[in-house]
Image 1 (cartoon, rainbow, N blue to C red):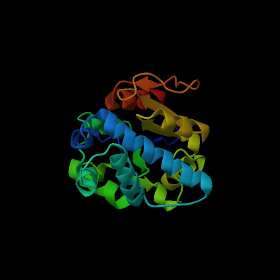
Image 2 (image 1 turned 120 degrees about the vertical axis):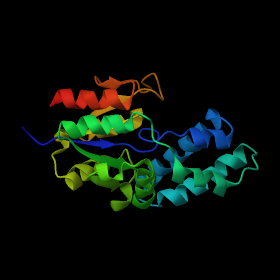
Image 3 (image 1 turned 60 degrees about the vertical axis):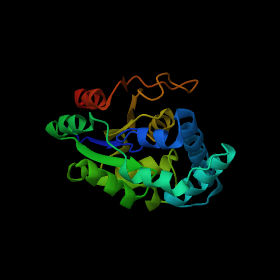
Length: 216
């Protein structure tokens, strides 16, 4: 049997963003910031430029707050990124994968240090074999090179690596790079892209992990 591995997306997949939503005053405000953050990250990658995630998060948040005419303190909002809570089913998902001897990693647009801090706070750090950050190759997801780099770091062929993510754009990027993927639909509810809806969709992380185990 070929070695199998999984990488979880971090923000919005393993860790939920409710504290940020509450800090900003609602889901629409959070979406306005994160959509701008993603757009800016992708734009930099397409332009062949690079800025670290924390710097980009800060600059796009300040723009979002200015457009919303908000007097919120950007530093106070950004501080919430360092202490996001995990989804309650994250531990059970890890347990299912460990029992099936599936290597578990994370693949994030965030920085390695900040991601490690989140995992440590959730008690998940010792259960993660690899923390793969885009800062290692200075390209943001969903650039195909990011997913191939993750497979190389973990030591498997791309086809033996499955991404679990709650973002359709992330799932589409992984599949385009030759990975398998499971879309967790609890954020988007409906596949937002015209084509490419994955055959593997789950309502939560535990179900997503089970789909990976059954594939073996």
